[in-house]
Image 1 (cartoon, one colour):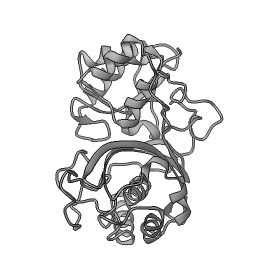
Image 2: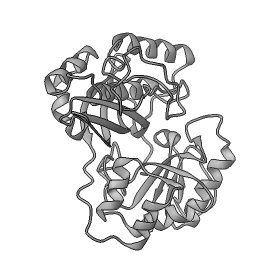
Image 3: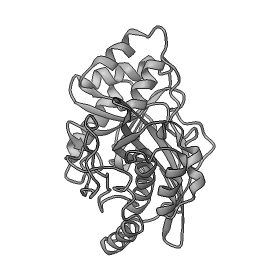
Length: 334
């Protein structure tokens, strides 16, 4: 998802970050955890704090609240987006339904009307737990942002537990130093195709290509170009790549512009973790990210973006901006 340079708020200082995160955490006390998100082992490399809520019913896994680190461009924006998704998509036994979800959202100080936009995040169930896999930018400007919250969800209906999950494009605006959510756009992958191209089937089965629910559904829908699957398979011969977004759950246009994004057209994918190293983590070797980006270009991508601006390649083949400091974007013309 490349874009022309846009005005971006400068990274906040450590003191400002801590104050902002503390304020949001106080405002949401009992909400992320109170939405029955019991804490144990985190599935993300970010800082996760245990919730004080009771353990879920047998059959439902333990989860941990996802929290950004202070190295983010705008950690408060990501935190706000994630807290909302966690509050809507997880609840204690008997606390399902829109009315209870509205109460949880209001407790965050956010508009209850956002629940009407939750879609697959709020299925009919007795109980649910949710694990945010990753939260990455779909776009970040000085006073507006798109945060793509990738999550897995487990629900219980009676004695039966089923698994699922989605990706939610959470839109935010900033005023007076505070980020608020203005809209939700859950992924809509579409139904599975009756037949799939061989490369798509192989990518779905490759254990070195880790796909969250919405991304896997994108491939199964058959609406993803085979160039994407071929590049994934080529990269998987060298790396274990953890994908965040493919087609659905991503802004239709390059954020802040009217130019169509390659993602909704099934011509791009984003990677948030490489060989177990999160792209956003400053401890991740820059050499690993640089090598991955160059290998993505060698796999056929005309448009590779990430936290490092590389030299060489064709005109505009490599790019870097604030939006892509937390993932590597791999785009294709066809």
